[in-house]
Image (cartoon, rainbow, N blue to C red; front, side, top):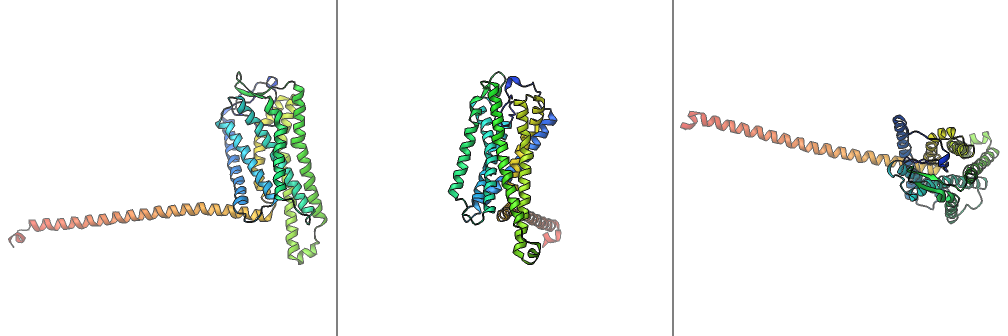
Length: 367
């Protein structure tokens, strides 16, 4: 696919000479796109920054593997939205470096985000199904994260190689030795980037739901025992969250994959271009939802997240209220000073008036 200066963010690129010519967006489409980008960007930056703030500033004890993975997921999502905004609105692609870095690194972050969610699902499944087993160490968790970074970059390396800057069209294009290689790589990317993570995530959460249903306490015991009631409530929350994660992953990331499969493999460019108009924003919306979805899995993490948000809001309002009080106080001082000046002027005027009357009075002069 031909990349314009607004930069198309997708998993791979359709070959430039096979694409149908496309007209630029209308003013209405552009305004809608900018509005959506601003809304998603603000939500993503606030949500992911809040997650990182809670994990790295409010945690006084050792962080759990779950929190480390969620923190890395937030960092990945922040990098994704930053690169998207940079190359869409601020930086024009005018060299091979910007083409290779923008397209390829964004694709790498997309794959990394999906596999971090896969790792979270696997870690979560292990902790629930085997609660008495020793949980993975912090060092092991960081090694897993580093391995995912290496794997994502290695798998995306062909995109680094084939992406170049075309001076004639002023866009980024992919030059493959043969269209067969492009199709094979696109299918492989679909399997590795979507099918495998979705299968593992779905299987992990199905195991969690099945385990919780098999080991749920009787309703009679729940009514008598408060701890069992809380456990049952937490189990229901985990089941709902699991269903939400799988649904969001499937619905928001599938359209982009379908667009590139239909365009590269089946050469159905009209459908591909139609889907690509909104698939990028769906993927960004998925990154935007991650901190809110994963923040609800752990009750403790959720309470920390809520407390941090409340503290920040209170700090903002408190700061504004202090400024308002200071302004009112300063205005009060100014008004008081003005009143004193007016009183002094009145007194001075009255004194001068009395003196002038005395000077004009002949009796007073005779005396």
